[in-house]
Length: 255
Length: 261
Image (cartoon, chains in turn purple, blue):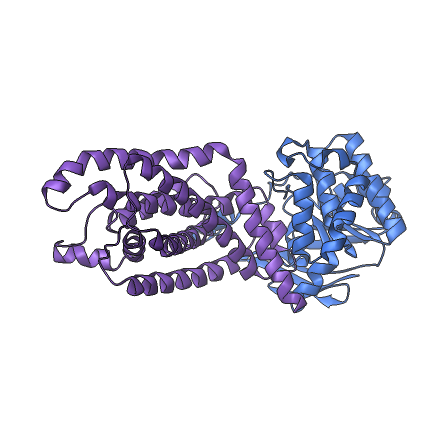
């Protein structure tokens, strides 16, 4: 019992550390909102008329949830950089010699990073209302935030897993872009999944983010591509898998 | 307090630590000296559970380092060669983080942190971010942090590197006092021979992964027929300049050269 309490306290303090670090870095906070807004304005107003003419309705409403997801995915992945700087500045060693399990270390970090990414997502979400986003119903908010947090967890764990292979922060952002760009573009965040060429549609089906986007958007605007339970199942299992992968990789880190 | 038997660490074909054995007595100050790349830090990393040995036995405070790692981790505190603080947190937050991960009861955290910050003269800087600290202040904070969970052994890997003489003396005064009054066992490495001369009860010199001499200052001097530790050190390890810790890439390069021949 004492042991469990200790591990939970550890997870909590690691979570808190991620939050504090993030809130103290104002430029990071601002910059991570700027890019999604640019996307939203450029794509949103750029494609608005074509989308409406094609009989699909309001593109801003369709696009805004996708852009929120984009901001969550990016800030979640960038949490990996935190692990690399902890390696560089030696703080990682302080946690590795402490009498706590490796799993608690990686889990606390991941929860903290995911919370930061979700906060980021909520900020961008609030901005989308200024551009003209309309919520279908308030009842969907709860499941929308659940999906948002799962997406944040998935990509934080993925970014942290990748970061275990790196020792400098120079190459890491390049690798992130290499992975995040295709994952984002092939998720249905920017366009509807109906009527896509077959091979292309398969690529999207293999992407866990596709289910995250569908669950999140569907909860907000009330139109799903798949059943929400199926979205939740696929995303949930993906999160578990990447968490296991992350703690295994982290267990191998030697200093 | 510390027992090391036939310890070996190999990185591929490079042997960083080559069958060393030694003991550190309870409540003593032990200096572990050697040129760059001799195997000092590798040995410490194995003692503090950061690196698994290729072969050999290690124990701290009667606990097997490999099998009872949690008990071992509770038994020692460490100040690493490089700083290991979180720059974006305050001095107090760094200490608090440590108190939680080492499982200090909630009621004891604050009084203990306050006492230790007082001890290293950082009480008035407790709310400052560590990134604003000088090297000496960071070191003092790290020592305070290493003592927070009341360890029996304190490892110090070149604790005074890059500090001015005033700060060095200051830091050693704390350590000596803790050793005398609390019976803290101290294991340290340094390149400043006068630190070992002045403070160590026993000295071991390691070179190319092997311990080349061990004993008190007097015994090392008489063994090498020299007048001070620096001369003794040089006569034991030679005058060649060593490369800074060869990284794993460097080692691979050496290996590739071997294969090409």
